Image: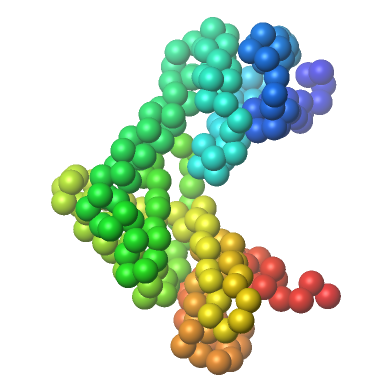
Length: 236
């Protein structure tokens, strides 16, 4: 098993699949047995740190995208890892759960103050995470349309009033936006990432744009811009 350098990542990926959908409808006893089987494989690994790094990344995705099946199963897996790795290794993973709970309370407070989180007709929601508790993220800036910028500004105003010595860094590449077009007789909802929403909102102001125009007005880096545009084009 240890002759293959990818084994730690494969086991972490399998574990992610179990915690997202594999354990659906499975009893507590069976859940415990299946997670214990993963831990037995983990105990044989030479590259435990590689597994933990991959597991952390998968866990962050499950938490942020709300794709985990059961919080109990997640906590059970953390307990099992803690037995094998010790408190220090698993502490950062536990902090991610704490962050999500604190973020929910903070968002509830914001929604009470700002019309249930609806700002100028835009329903806004965000997660506030502690830098250092989550996998390292590079920040990729872009120029938000006024509707989205107004939402982030209002939240920053609220946050700085509550925590004067803390700064927010926006990770727009993790965001999801729901847009409703007004030019169709039938009602549609477009579910896009933040960059695609920025691109589409440019067409509220312009009837046609070149690639260079979009790049200039959105300030999205070229790699991210290309990835976002290709899904808005005809796949052929």
